[in-house]
Amino acid sequence: MRILLSNDDGVHSPGLRALYEELEGLGELDVVAPDRDHSGASNALTLNRPLTVENHSNGFRSVDGTPTDCVHLAVNGLFDHPFDRVVSGINTHANLGDDIIYSGTVAAALEGRHLGLPAIAVSLVNEGHFHYQTAGRVVRMLLECTTPLALGPRSILNVNVPDVPWEDLAGFRVTRLGHRERAEGAVPVTCPRGKQRYWIGAAGKGGDAGPGTDFHAVREGFVSITPVHTDMTRHEALPDLETWVDGLAEDGGPRQ
Image 1: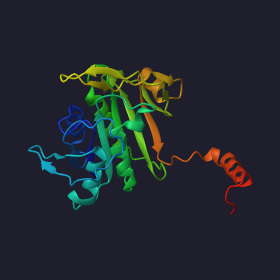
Image 2: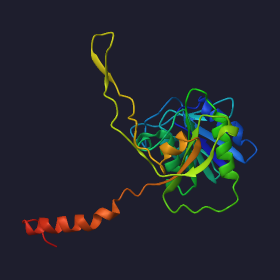
Image 3: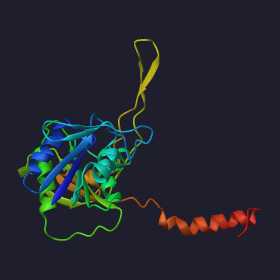
Image 4: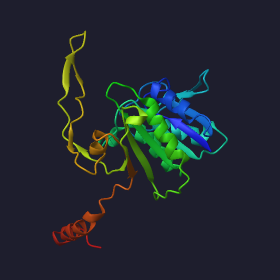
């Protein structure tokens, strides 16, 4: 098995190193990650300039671009061989609920999905203990599982791991995405030149965080495993929207 590893915290992230060390021996590993922290980059591709790839002494490669750039380049140009899996992480903090909209960690896994590869995004629900090895061991167990798993097209697994030793994990739970409350307000600061600047405020608390959600699972000490797909169509809204659009024609709009 040949596995591509990436992340959004950067090529020097301790989570990426821990993931690599935990998966050593499982297959052939290649690492392509951003040259710096790109948290919050989501699925951005760099299209306004060429990208630079740097080879590091430990065998890792870095790209002066986004997590999506890294996976895209790795699969479409940097290597002659195909990959069997894409794993993105271990993210330094949780990616729960609405976090995945902004997450570069999830975006890197999704880019692997775009390219027809089974992909996993893994994050540590960090409480300051930094049990990256626990999260790495979770990923290895998922990759070693011999039972076939069919998620369907355009799908990945979003995995969040409590920040505890392996023996303290309560188990595994299949979950849905919860939802956060509104983010905290932007924080104004003044730069040395006297100009007003703003820090983006902290993420909101879990508003929809009850049983069955990823928030609830990790709070109870379980690894949360959520299937995520990118068909953003609101299918149940289609009939009402059809009726509404038909009404536009009755109000003088163009008719078919």
